[in-house]
Image (cartoon, rainbow, N blue to C red; front, side, top):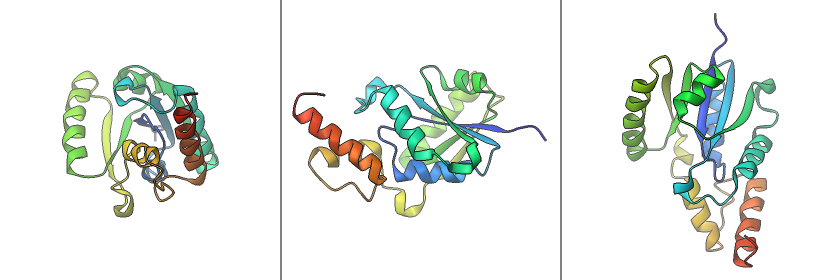
Amino acid sequence: MAHRIGVYPGTFDPITLGHMDVIKRGVRLVDELIIGVTTNAAKSPMFADEERIAMVEREVAGLSDGRVKVVGFNSLLMDFADAMGASVVIRGIRGVTDFEYEYQLTGMNRQLNDRVETVFLMADVSLQPIASRLVKEIASYDGEISRFVSPTVRADVVARVARNRSGRG
């Protein structure tokens, strides 16, 4: 059987416990999982690309005997999947709204490259409400985010909020 490579793309700004749930489950479906950290200026990132890549690398260190790697990209997802030799794209779904968006995106991606299959993984019920944008919003009002991110990511977010407030961005 061929070596199956999967791609799990996202901005991961910041990486949440929901993302980690999908990563841990996704790696069981493929021989190698590439976490594609992408740029999306429309989402007003809190962290620069390099910071997000380093954050994700830190969070996934030690998972699955080195079968998980982190790669930054700034291209069409299907071009990235091709470049990585991937046959599967893994997408996390929290609810109906995510599904509607992902359904349309998957249809477009199939038009671009029908050799790559998309697999949807539902987030664990306890993690479904978590969204990076909400984590950032809660943190910006000094709310507690430890239920949504790891302790190290929490420290990163809290430090960035403090830096942004002091004008050192």
